Image (cartoon, rainbow, N blue to C red; front, side, top):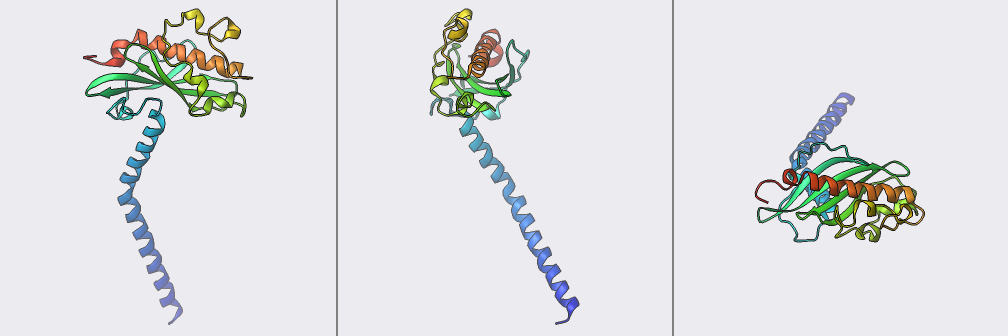
Length: 201
């Protein structure tokens, strides 16, 4: 076989392989994207108990107004539903911790009670404020059942600041940022209840 025939053969094999790879990737991309969305959904929504909702909340984002709050900013919101009725609202909250942005997912039931809080992103010091990123998280779980008015506004602070809540050991700034962001989200829920819950709830 001469040299030019070998080059043509290699080029044809390369072109055939690249074409097959492209077609395989193109045909499987929608399925891969759907699976990634499902994994993201499960990861995010484990803040709600299994069976609590029957819709896909992340596929129904809420339009938030006035999302810059006293101590945090709301980056998004979602409505969890069961049998066509809203059962919870999930708010993505961003605040500033000790080492940078702290993003929380805050789940609130239709009565304004906290169902759960999960850290989505944090850059806090490992072993100190970084513990806020652990899941499940006993410290964040201690907020379950609280509302905007339980405790009072003055109670929505660390014990160190004459409030009701303990802090993560060695992580005052991180703990304060989380408490303030959760309180902001509950306040926002109360002030925008009709918008967040939707019609018929």
